[in-house]
Amino acid sequence: MAKKNVKELKRLLSEVSEQLEEMGNEAGEEFMENAGEWMSDIQHKANRAWENGRQRGQQAVETMKARGKQADEYVHEKPWQVIAGAAAIGAMVGYLFSSHKRD
Image 1 (cartoon, rainbow, N blue to C red):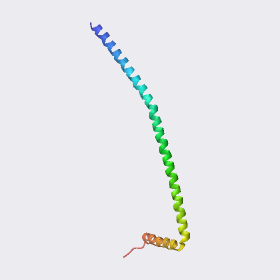
Image 2 (cartoon, rainbow, N blue to C red):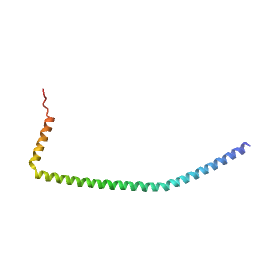
Image 3 (cartoon, rainbow, N blue to C red):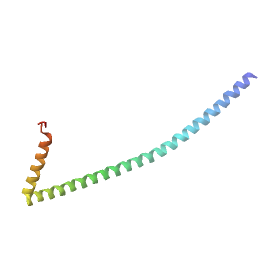
Image 4 (cartoon, rainbow, N blue to C red):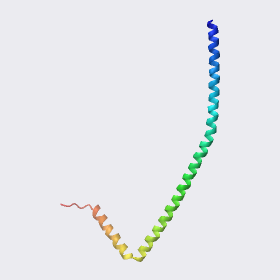
């Protein structure tokens, strides 16, 4: 009788093992099917982010070029005001960083 119970237990364990293996195979296949879709989605989002960053970089370069051109025109139109402003800023920075002590 004990041998019969052991045989029955082995048979049940074998069936459970087979069922778990089938479930694992199905889950693995489903994962692999979804993994391709996930990777495609991730790659699409990465490409979109890369393109967005590239466009923003180009916009920043264009904006900086325009601002530089405006500054250049202003300096050529009003050179003495720019020189006076630069001198005033230089004097203030020099005063702030001077090493003399006040008593």
